[in-house]
Length: 403
Image (cartoon, rainbow, N blue to C red; front, side, top):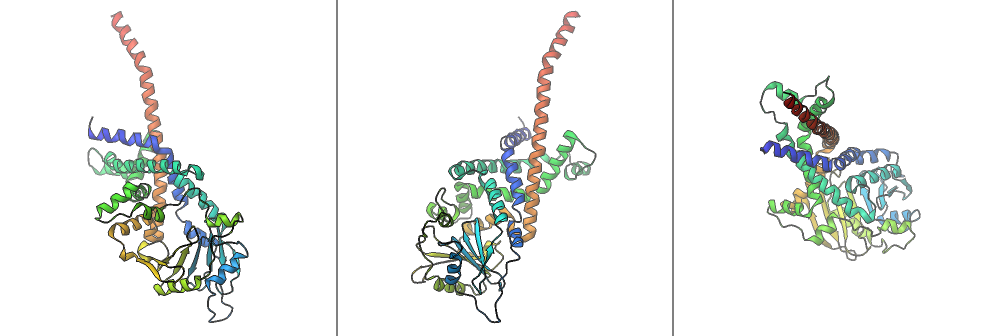
């Protein structure tokens, strides 16, 4: 078997086995492309306004006390932005985020519950095929394996699309959409052209997905950069969530008491703001137990670039710095790993990068659709030849006997 034929059958097998799941991940990837911008647009009517010039923001503890009248218990996260008109965002899990006027403490309303619920469901399908908590590990394993199969498809595809004879006409046939085609010729043209133009962004999206799906791929990234890989416990705390464990927002909705209170946050919050004078947003995610050090994510950008993010961990009782982690302090492996997260969504390149990622995801869906149709036509032709072969043999035998 020639190398080209071996690559073809590998490509065909991977596409047939993983095609439907890849189609789901591609379509959901398109829907998630502008999640951040769409959510912000839906919330555009909620704005903070100082009652008089020079009015300072209220302390964080006061804001949380006001939110407690609407949703009791300690929230899962709170975000404050430097934009004077931006309300504070107080989250109870990912499903419920309340917007609070930072000057008056008034709860302005809930942040786009419909949009957030929609994107949460889409993301659940993207990550683990919509599986419930008890089956998410299985769903994640399936999407991870199919994402790896997608990587095989993206890598082997260019070798199959290369023309056997290089000429301008052959190059145009595989790189430009042609009108007036139908059936196999149309699908073949769409498959080749889409694959050629989407190959590079799809490779980055899928490769970053593999790194995020498998610990061995994540560790390999560190080894290739000559960096120390994080120990499993640290990696798990930073990159995964415990399945089946109720979050703080869920406890509050069920009426369970909060595991801790917000006392002392004013001191901690002021320390975090002073750490990076040019901050644009500060986010505190409360520990799942409600106890222990407090870690602040401080961003000097729009939230889409890891090099503009830093993490500050403070002792909850004294306010002393436990750990200060600006992006420049990370080793090469962790810096590259941080970029992979935002390469996967395209956010590393801003709105242009998100657009390219969205187009590439749509291209991935078209590749699966045309690829499966090409495979189905090949199967039908093979069955037809298998059915006609005995008839042709009988005819030849009859002709031989009569002669």
